[in-house]
Image 1: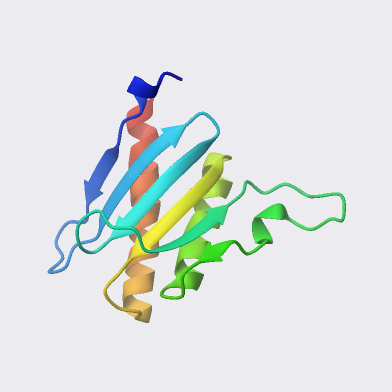
Image 2: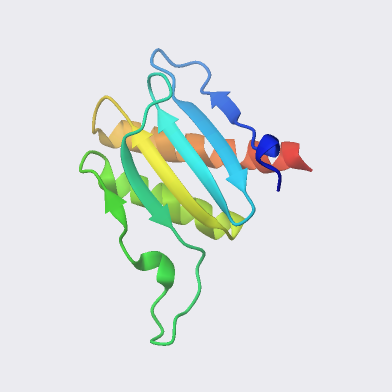
Length: 123
């Protein structure tokens, strides 16, 4: 993959007062995913690994690799879910203005939509 081939895919949530924005770029063995309710900003970061059973029978995607404290469980869930779906290493970052159950559920639904759209437009 040539460095000039690295492109960002962007999607903004529709019909929301404070819409979420997703930014995705992909490399040969991984994917970067940024989710924010503002502009492109880094926030809590989690790394998701494709589900593989290690020698000890532990799923490698269950090893917690998270940097940051705000929305840490949400970010980890996103990284692991996307890694499972795309079978690649995922670095996910969420920068959300609040920690609310409703926003977390909305974010998970939005990420599912974004990943579906991203992979369908690649084909």
